[in-house]
Image (cartoon, rainbow, N blue to C red; front, top):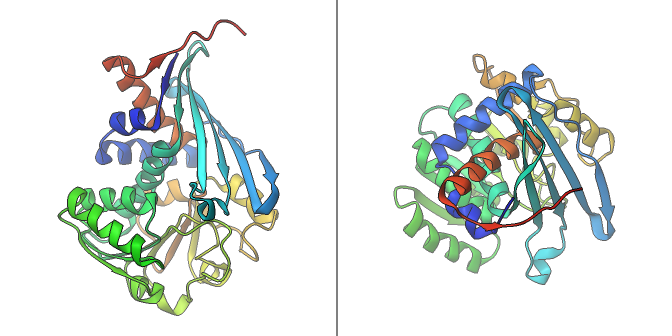
Length: 314
């Protein structure tokens, strides 16, 4: 088995176009019942923190694995990331572990690839985009938006230093993107055909006013209901990457007074775009992580990257 650090994973990630193809196929497979992905078991910690196990099996592609992910909303105040975790990739034929990898870069890339698959299928080519938040997800999404040709992007961030850091990063890494930053969330999203929200999960007082969101917009909340509240969800076609998981989270009250979802994200990717505003509550599923992680494991084995670990026997 190989152990891969976050830096290893970052270097071995598939390019955005390949990651989009992988997660597109995974989302469609989920909607068709072609993979086994149970709702995430959740355990809780103080301060609204929680952790999920995210197992997945995709027999048609001999894929098997599990991600362990924790979300601690108060971590930024301590200079720590909100989200951290590990991913295990097994051989789908034998069950033997192939790789264990840090899940930071993987989660950011997978999340952006899922958003990218939705944007590619459900938004007009090159449509302007608005993003809230200036952290890791902003960077991974800017890479995907540039790859897809969505080059007019406005990002909201509350702190001046975060805005400055993002602008400097974008000039170096996504030079084709015409990036504007603002301290006004309304300015970032108003009338934009594509809206992605990447604030902290569990944040209060950050809901977007539904009147700011175009009636035919594609809305992709990464932060559960922190930004996209029940009123906006009720006024939209509401999809989820994994409907049973979404329903479990909704019934638990994590999404407030959210309505039930009407369809799977993978189903939307596999048909003509419905009219009106679309909200895709892609809460994260183990299969999307697994297909990207397996590509990383393949690259690590081909290149001899990472650190071999003797797992012994159970």
